[in-house]
Length: 214
Image (cartoon, rainbow, N blue to C red; front, side):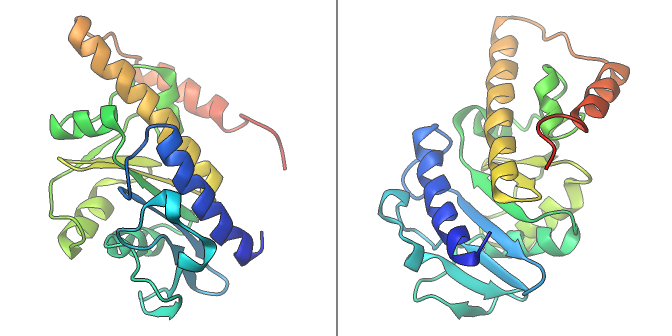
Protein backbone atom coordinates (compact mmCIF):
# COMPACT_ATOMS: atom_id res chain seq x y z
CA UNK A 1 0.00 0.00 0.00
CA UNK A 2 1.39 3.40 -0.99
CA UNK A 3 1.68 5.89 1.84
CA UNK A 4 -0.81 8.26 0.22
CA UNK A 5 -3.28 5.35 0.44
CA UNK A 6 -2.41 4.89 4.13
CA UNK A 7 -3.44 8.49 4.77
CA UNK A 8 -6.76 7.91 3.03
CA UNK A 9 -7.25 4.66 4.94
CA UNK A 10 -6.62 6.38 8.27
CA UNK A 11 -9.32 8.92 7.38
CA UNK A 12 -11.73 6.20 6.25
CA UNK A 13 -11.32 4.05 9.32
CA UNK A 14 -11.55 7.08 11.59
CA UNK A 15 -15.04 7.61 10.17
CA UNK A 16 -15.71 3.88 10.48
CA UNK A 17 -14.95 4.13 14.19
CA UNK A 18 -17.82 6.61 14.43
CA UNK A 19 -20.15 4.58 12.22
CA UNK A 20 -19.54 1.40 14.23
CA UNK A 21 -19.92 3.15 17.60
CA UNK A 22 -16.31 2.63 18.61
CA UNK A 23 -15.84 6.29 19.54
CA UNK A 24 -17.42 9.76 19.30
CA UNK A 25 -16.31 13.09 17.83
CA UNK A 26 -12.53 13.13 17.71
CA UNK A 27 -12.03 10.53 20.46
CA UNK A 28 -9.37 7.89 20.08
CA UNK A 29 -6.66 7.76 17.42
CA UNK A 30 -5.15 5.58 14.71
CA UNK A 31 -1.66 5.16 13.31
CA UNK A 32 0.44 3.11 10.90
CA UNK A 33 4.19 2.50 11.13
CA UNK A 34 6.30 2.12 8.00
CA UNK A 35 9.35 0.41 9.52
CA UNK A 36 11.42 0.51 6.33
CA UNK A 37 11.16 4.29 6.13
CA UNK A 38 10.89 4.82 9.91
CA UNK A 39 7.73 6.86 9.46
CA UNK A 40 4.63 6.90 11.66
CA UNK A 41 1.37 8.11 10.07
CA UNK A 42 -1.04 9.23 12.78
CA UNK A 43 -4.34 11.08 13.09
CA UNK A 44 -4.15 14.68 14.36
CA UNK A 45 -5.07 15.88 17.82
CA UNK A 46 -8.64 17.02 18.43
CA UNK A 47 -9.88 17.02 14.84
CA UNK A 48 -13.28 15.41 14.25
CA UNK A 49 -13.09 12.33 12.02
CA UNK A 50 -15.92 13.55 9.80
CA UNK A 51 -13.79 16.56 8.86
CA UNK A 52 -10.55 14.63 8.42
CA UNK A 53 -8.70 14.68 5.08
CA UNK A 54 -5.47 13.05 3.95
CA UNK A 55 -3.70 16.40 4.32
CA UNK A 56 -4.52 16.38 8.03
CA UNK A 57 -2.62 13.15 8.71
CA UNK A 58 0.65 13.83 10.51
CA UNK A 59 3.87 12.01 9.62
CA UNK A 60 6.54 11.58 12.30
CA UNK A 61 9.82 9.74 12.53
CA UNK A 62 10.35 6.92 15.01
CA UNK A 63 11.34 9.39 17.73
CA UNK A 64 8.16 11.44 17.31
CA UNK A 65 9.56 14.42 15.40
CA UNK A 66 7.06 15.74 12.85
CA UNK A 67 8.43 15.47 9.32
CA UNK A 68 5.24 16.17 7.35
CA UNK A 69 1.92 17.87 7.99
CA UNK A 70 0.68 21.14 9.47
CA UNK A 71 -1.38 19.61 12.28
CA UNK A 72 -0.31 18.53 15.75
CA UNK A 73 -0.17 14.73 16.07
CA UNK A 74 -2.48 12.90 18.43
CA UNK A 75 -1.83 13.52 22.11
CA UNK A 76 -1.30 9.75 22.38
CA UNK A 77 1.60 9.65 19.93
CA UNK A 78 3.80 8.57 22.84
CA UNK A 79 2.13 5.25 23.45
CA UNK A 80 1.87 4.52 19.71
CA UNK A 81 5.65 4.96 19.44
CA UNK A 82 6.21 2.92 22.60
CA UNK A 83 4.21 0.02 21.16
CA UNK A 84 6.06 0.13 17.83
CA UNK A 85 9.40 0.03 19.63
CA UNK A 86 8.21 -2.61 22.10
CA UNK A 87 7.06 -5.22 19.54
CA UNK A 88 8.31 -5.60 15.99
CA UNK A 89 5.14 -7.40 14.88
CA UNK A 90 3.04 -4.25 15.34
CA UNK A 91 2.36 -2.29 12.16
CA UNK A 92 -0.72 -0.33 13.23
CA UNK A 93 -2.48 0.88 16.38
CA UNK A 94 -6.18 1.67 16.86
CA UNK A 95 -7.28 3.37 20.09
CA UNK A 96 -11.02 3.59 20.79
CA UNK A 97 -13.39 4.76 23.50
CA UNK A 98 -15.91 2.03 22.66
CA UNK A 99 -18.65 1.90 25.27
CA UNK A 100 -18.53 -1.66 26.60
CA UNK A 101 -14.75 -2.01 26.56
CA UNK A 102 -14.46 1.34 28.30
CA UNK A 103 -17.14 0.36 30.82
CA UNK A 104 -15.11 -2.69 31.81
CA UNK A 105 -11.95 -0.57 31.92
CA UNK A 106 -13.72 1.78 34.31
CA UNK A 107 -14.66 -1.24 36.44
CA UNK A 108 -10.95 -2.23 36.40
CA UNK A 109 -11.83 -5.60 34.87
CA UNK A 110 -9.84 -7.37 32.22
CA UNK A 111 -11.78 -9.38 29.64
CA UNK A 112 -11.51 -13.13 30.31
CA UNK A 113 -12.30 -15.87 27.77
CA UNK A 114 -16.08 -15.48 28.00
CA UNK A 115 -16.39 -16.01 24.22
CA UNK A 116 -13.95 -17.57 21.78
CA UNK A 117 -13.67 -14.29 19.81
CA UNK A 118 -11.52 -12.95 22.62
CA UNK A 119 -8.91 -14.92 20.66
CA UNK A 120 -8.57 -11.91 18.34
CA UNK A 121 -6.56 -10.47 21.24
CA UNK A 122 -5.24 -13.64 22.88
CA UNK A 123 -6.42 -15.85 25.73
CA UNK A 124 -7.75 -12.70 27.43
CA UNK A 125 -7.59 -8.89 27.20
CA UNK A 126 -5.38 -7.54 30.00
CA UNK A 127 -5.94 -4.27 31.87
CA UNK A 128 -3.27 -1.57 32.15
CA UNK A 129 -3.35 0.53 35.34
CA UNK A 130 -4.63 4.09 35.10
CA UNK A 131 -2.30 6.88 33.98
CA UNK A 132 -3.11 10.35 32.64
CA UNK A 133 -3.67 10.43 28.86
CA UNK A 134 -0.77 11.56 26.72
CA UNK A 135 1.89 10.86 29.36
CA UNK A 136 5.00 8.67 29.43
CA UNK A 137 3.41 6.92 32.42
CA UNK A 138 0.55 5.73 30.22
CA UNK A 139 2.95 4.48 27.55
CA UNK A 140 4.89 2.54 30.21
CA UNK A 141 1.69 1.09 31.67
CA UNK A 142 0.68 -0.20 28.24
CA UNK A 143 4.02 -1.75 27.29
CA UNK A 144 4.47 -3.24 30.78
CA UNK A 145 1.05 -4.95 30.57
CA UNK A 146 0.27 -5.87 26.96
CA UNK A 147 2.55 -8.90 26.71
CA UNK A 148 1.76 -10.86 23.53
CA UNK A 149 -1.85 -9.66 23.41
CA UNK A 150 -3.34 -7.84 20.42
CA UNK A 151 -5.55 -5.67 22.64
CA UNK A 152 -5.39 -4.03 26.04
CA UNK A 153 -7.86 -2.13 28.20
CA UNK A 154 -6.70 1.16 29.72
CA UNK A 155 -8.18 1.68 33.17
CA UNK A 156 -10.76 4.51 33.20
CA UNK A 157 -9.92 5.30 29.60
CA UNK A 158 -10.59 2.88 26.72
CA UNK A 159 -9.19 0.18 24.45
CA UNK A 160 -6.00 -0.15 22.41
CA UNK A 161 -5.87 -2.71 19.58
CA UNK A 162 -2.83 -3.58 17.49
CA UNK A 163 -2.18 -5.51 14.30
CA UNK A 164 0.28 -6.15 11.51
CA UNK A 165 -1.65 -3.60 9.46
CA UNK A 166 -4.45 -1.09 9.95
CA UNK A 167 -7.23 -3.39 8.81
CA UNK A 168 -6.12 -6.10 11.25
CA UNK A 169 -5.90 -3.66 14.17
CA UNK A 170 -9.36 -2.28 13.37
CA UNK A 171 -10.80 -5.81 13.25
CA UNK A 172 -9.36 -6.50 16.70
CA UNK A 173 -10.91 -3.31 18.08
CA UNK A 174 -14.31 -4.19 16.67
CA UNK A 175 -14.32 -7.85 17.74
CA UNK A 176 -13.11 -7.07 21.26
CA UNK A 177 -15.86 -4.48 21.69
CA UNK A 178 -18.35 -7.24 20.85
CA UNK A 179 -16.76 -9.55 23.42
CA UNK A 180 -16.74 -6.70 25.96
CA UNK A 181 -20.47 -6.24 25.44
CA UNK A 182 -21.12 -9.96 25.83
CA UNK A 183 -19.02 -10.08 29.02
CA UNK A 184 -20.75 -7.05 30.52
CA UNK A 185 -24.19 -8.49 29.75
CA UNK A 186 -23.29 -11.85 31.31
CA UNK A 187 -22.13 -10.03 34.43
CA UNK A 188 -25.48 -8.25 34.58
CA UNK A 189 -27.47 -11.45 33.95
CA UNK A 190 -25.54 -13.71 36.30
CA UNK A 191 -22.23 -15.52 36.56
CA UNK A 192 -20.27 -15.88 33.28
CA UNK A 193 -19.11 -19.40 32.38
CA UNK A 194 -15.63 -19.00 30.96
CA UNK A 195 -13.75 -21.10 28.44
CA UNK A 196 -10.92 -23.18 29.88
CA UNK A 197 -7.23 -22.68 29.18
CA UNK A 198 -7.19 -25.79 26.98
CA UNK A 199 -10.25 -24.61 25.04
CA UNK A 200 -8.63 -21.23 24.39
CA UNK A 201 -5.38 -22.92 23.36
CA UNK A 202 -7.36 -24.81 20.73
CA UNK A 203 -9.08 -21.59 19.58
CA UNK A 204 -5.80 -19.72 19.26
CA UNK A 205 -4.30 -22.55 17.24
CA UNK A 206 -7.27 -22.53 14.85
CA UNK A 207 -7.01 -18.75 14.53
CA UNK A 208 -3.53 -19.16 13.03
CA UNK A 209 -5.17 -20.50 9.87
CA UNK A 210 -8.24 -18.25 9.96
CA UNK A 211 -9.19 -16.14 6.94
CA UNK A 212 -7.82 -16.04 3.42
CA UNK A 213 -4.21 -16.76 2.54
CA UNK A 214 -2.32 -13.91 0.90
